[in-house]
Image (cartoon, rainbow, N blue to C red; front, side):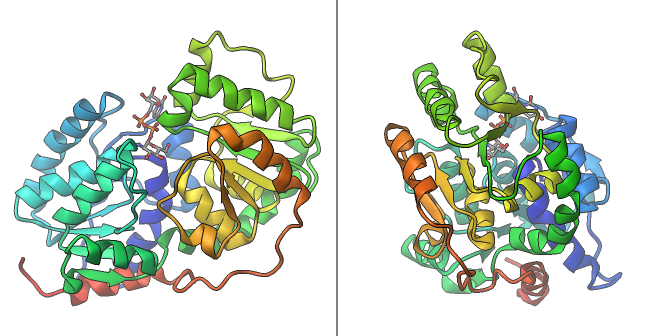
Length: 360
Ligand code: UD1
C-alpha cells in the first residue's frame, strides 16, 4: 500500500487474513507514496490499522521516478520475506510497482480491485490497472462488469474471482463511529446542517494540472456556492496548483480546509446534500449511502455507480449546469442492490488466497 485510497481497501484484507490464525503471516509494506500526516498517518489511527512493518519512504516524484523508486525499494523486502503472495490494491503507482517487482521475482501477485477500466489512456491509473491485471495471478474483482472487462482482454477465468467491494467493508464497519463525530464536526465547520451542504474533492491531473481547466472548475464551484454552502478539503496536488495560480481568493465563497481523516470525511459525506468529486472511491461510497454525486470527469471505471447508484458524470464543460440540476432533483430513497457490497469482501479475498492452487 502507498497512497490514501489504498488504506481503506487493505484494512479489511489484513483483518480477514489475521482471522485465519497464526498459519498466515503478513508483512505490511507502506511504500511512502503518500507521507503527509493527513494523507497517511491519520488513516492508520482512524482505521485501526497496525503500523507498517516496513516503510519504503519513496515520497513524491514523476511517474517513472516514483514507480522505479518503489520497485527498487520493494525488491530487497520481497527477497528477504519470500512471501507466497504479494497482495496489491487499487490502481496507484505503488500498486503497479509492487506487482511488477513481485511478478519478475516469481512471486504470486493478487490484485484486489481488479478489472476496472475507464478506457481512457490519458489517466495514469488506467495504465496501472491494465498492467497490474495482466501480471496478477489472482484477480479479485469488486463488480461483475470488472469480470467482463478481464474476460474481454483474454484473462483466463480461473484467475478471476468476484469478491465484492473491500472499501465498503471499511465503510460499513466505521459508519457508526463517523456518525458519532457529526455534532462536533458540524460545529467546527460553522454549524452545518444535515443535507444542507455540498462536499467537494478534486485532485485528478486532468482537472487540476491545466491552469485553464482548474480556473474554470473553481469559478463554477464559486458560483454554485451562492446556492448552497460548499466544503472543500483540498488535496496537496490541488493546493499546489492553486497556489501556483496566485491563490486567487476563493475562500470567501468556498470553505477550503486541509484534507480530512477517514472518519471526519465519512461523516461529512454521509450527511451531504451532494458530493462533487473526481475520485473513484467517492463514487462508490456515495452510491452505497444513497448520497447524490456529480463526478467531474468524462468517464468512469465504475459504471455500476451510474447504472445502479447516485452518480452523474459531468465533464468540466457541463459542470455548472449539472450541479444546479442535481440540486433541484429529489434525493433518491432506499439503497441500490449491489452484489457483494456487504461488508464481507475482505473475508472473500482471504478465502480466495488460501484456496488458490500453489505455484504459478
Ligand atoms: C495518487 C494516485 C491517485 C489517487 C490519489 C489519491 C497515482 C498515479 N495516483 O495521486 O490514483 O487517486 O493518489 O490521493 O498513483 N503530496 C503531498 N503529500 C503527500 C502526497 C503527495 O504533498 O502525502 C503532493 C506532492 O506534491 C506530490 C503530489 O501531491 O507531487 C501528488 O502526489 P502523487 O502521489 O504523485 O499523486 P496523487 O495526485 O496524490
